[in-house]
Every structure is written in C-alpha cells, then in structure tokens.
Length: 400
Image (cartoon, rainbow, N blue to C red):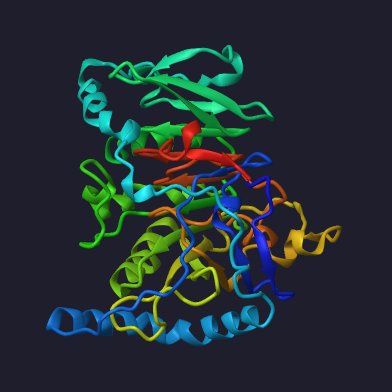
C-alpha cells in the first residue's frame, strides 16, 4: 500500500526489521507526510511511587514477560547491522505540537446534527474518477458517504468547509474513505462493505482509554469500547488467509478483550503479533525496556478466521524480500504468522507505521485493505474514521 520502500533493514528471516514511518505512508514517489523531529535521546521516566502506579507496573509486566526475550533477540540482531543515526530516513520537519488547526473534525457536531433532517439520505458513492479535477465539494456533499478514487493515479479533492475556507486533499490511487461518527455509521459502512468481495487485511487502531492522552475536544476518546463488538470483522475478511490486526496498549485487560471477546465474536483465532519498538534515531528504545511506568513498544495483535469458516481461494504470493520467488498459498493458508519485531522512530502523535509491507509474505501481492480509526489514506485501502483526512491535506505533505 506504499509506493516508496519503507525498509531500512530487514533480517534474512523476516522476523525483525527497521522501517521508516513517513516512507511507509507515502503513496507517490518523492512525497512524504510532514513529520516531527526524530527523537535523539531516550526519555527518562520516574519509578512508580503510589499504589496506582505500582498496580500499573504489575499489569505491564504480565504482558512484557512473554515478549521481552523476543524483542531483545530482534533488537540485538538489528543493532548488529544498522548504523547509529541511520534508524530513520530524512524528514520534512515541522513543529507539530504547535498546530492549532483542528481540521474537518471540528465540524463533526454540525454534520451529525444535520443527520436528523435527512441530510445524508443520499448515500450513493462519490467516484472522483467521474468528476472534473477542479470540482469543489461542500463538506456536506461527502460527509457520511463513501468517496473513492478508482483511478491508478492520485487525485486532489477540494473541500469547502462551513467556514467557507477551501482546502485541497490528496486522495491516493485506488483508495476510498468514509468520514462519519463511528457509532452512528458502523451499520451503514458494514452494509457497504458487504457488497464488496471482502478484505485481505483489516487494521484497527481503537482509542483505548488513556488518561495521559488528549486528542482535542472532539475525538475518539469518548467512544464506548464495547461498541467494537458491533464491528462484524469476521464477515468482512475475504477468506482464511485474510488477516485482521488490532493495535493494543500494554494493559493486559485490553489485550484480553481483543483476544477473547473480539476475536471470539468474529470467529477469529490469534496467529501472531507485530511489535513496534519505538526507538531514537540512534536505535535506542525511547524508554528503558525495564521501566515500570511505560514500555517503549506497542503491539498489533493478528488474527485469522478459524479454519473451516470459509473456502480457500488459490492465489500466488510473492515475498518482496526475495524478489522473483513465489509460492502457492497452501504453504500459508490460514497459518500462524508468529511475532515480528519492527523498530521505527516515532513520528506525529498517534501516527502508526503502515504494516502492510511487514505482512506482505502472508498476503496477496496487492492486498485489498480496510483501516478503521484511520487518520490518513493509503492505496488499495478503504479508510473509515471520524477524521480519515486528518493528515491528507496538501500542506501536511512535503517533498523528499
């Protein structure tokens, strides 16, 4: 789903890699999202002092105990090859902490209030390929509707906000988005998805409750986590080879919720994880790995449909790390993926690496993907979120 290689290094086994986050999100040669300065030194965290912090420490260690040896093995292998100062590519930098523009999400309350007046009864797909390049859309024209670019090239989408300001947004090739409040739109989005053949990859980045995270006045922080059970992800997956991945915090209760309740509801079994170790530009973890306050990594828990849920479809797959080789998908049909360690220098707040390249050997050559709670768009991907265009405005991108 990225046109520029995000790889800085990948181990021969494919179980550990260093990737560049901005490059992983690029969809056009020479174009990358504006980033923050790469982290130069690790943060020093205080030790837990009170009862709440001590309980948090015990909670963190429940998860960390099983992952620590695998993370250390992967990081040791990477440190032996990747040079200090080479753990990320050159960035187009801006101080993102001083940004005041809330983007389209600031109008969400207004858009939702119009729903009761039949404002979104027209739910036909907006296909940019059928429109002139300079077509101007009011926000109400696209809110609560699927907008798609079916062409093999990037398109610009011009949107007039209720304030009368006009902004241009990049819409990657063969991408779609659905901008609406999650709780009021999941049923409609699911019906739309049901008309498709299904997805090879579904990625979710839910807003797990976190007192230290403030995303603005209108954001995902207010979502009812139980509403994730309303997502019929099992029906969206194309077949047993398809993969669903959910980013989780290091709290054991959220991991348990995903692996037992969500996966159980969807008819999915756990098949592996992607562990994103957040590092400095010199390759050091951003926090001490043994810190009792926070861990310097996040995990993407991976699942596949339980065998027997769908009939397999034969596809030829290629591993980009060994270009030219191919294998029949019976070798990986519905199989385990294992734990993959990726090291990446953090970027803008809440911006996750695009993991499609990391999972490529377990997916079709050109997978059809869906991302929930997305804040950017990618080729061959449908993005459903409160603010899927957050990082797609043209002034959020620079040349590399």
